[in-house]
Length: 119
Image (cartoon, rainbow, N blue to C red; front, side):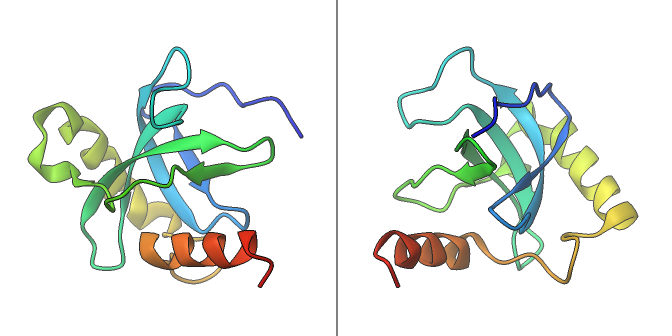
């Protein structure tokens, strides 16, 4: 386990054990929020929609907090527009994943669920 990296608004982070999703930090919580997240991020899903979700530091990597829904549409929130611009402009520079395309949030949550059940 490693200490949680220091992140600031507008920073890029990789989500998932194998860096599956590239995201932009749009909120840093002073302490873990009620849902368990350390930060809120925006990322592009498999349909190129900007989504905002809470993320937690697991000791080794960032992971999506298991929420009942699959996030909000970040394009609809005025407070998130600057981060969506960073996200959309930066996606062209590096790509959505270090190796191949990013998985959808639904695929990542399914993988995490199966992993926790020992499958």
